[in-house]
Image (cartoon, rainbow, N blue to C red; front, top):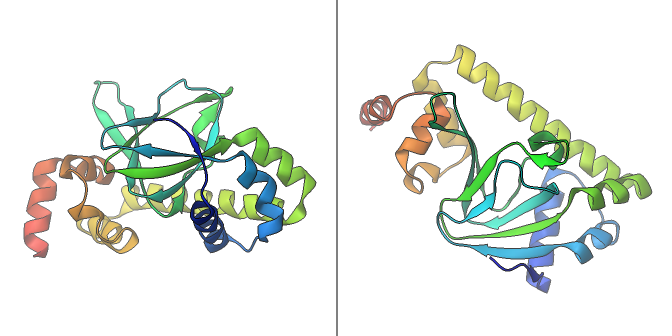
Length: 199
């Protein structure tokens, strides 16, 4: 997993992904693009480990990654899926005291763009357009997390599965179903039954 400079195509992909979140001018994003590097991941390659430093911001250009943690019984609990093209959860929401609070691994072959979280903070201070973009990223993440909490607390498993299908089309056919079950808060057996009912 050797970081490489972005190609012009990569730069366009990063900008297009960023602009889907909130309007941002290419010239305002240029200082960030200069510091970005792209890595190629194979299935099961680790992007982040608990405790990694320094915090990095990430764009997934293509492929699927999952964020996860181990629970008190040592089981891996899936926190989120990141399907390219997308911006991953902001570093401020997945790190503490300069260290990663989660693990993140590739579930498929993937291309991921990395850059220092501090670089984003510096550019946000210097440029109002990038600051507004950064605020939009954080707002989107807050809304997503609240929606997920409410879904886990109030919706039956069937509704959670249908919402996942709507939110991340094709994911169900791409990743191991035990990861999906973990994310939905149900057992793999329950997921299998639900899928059978919905066929």
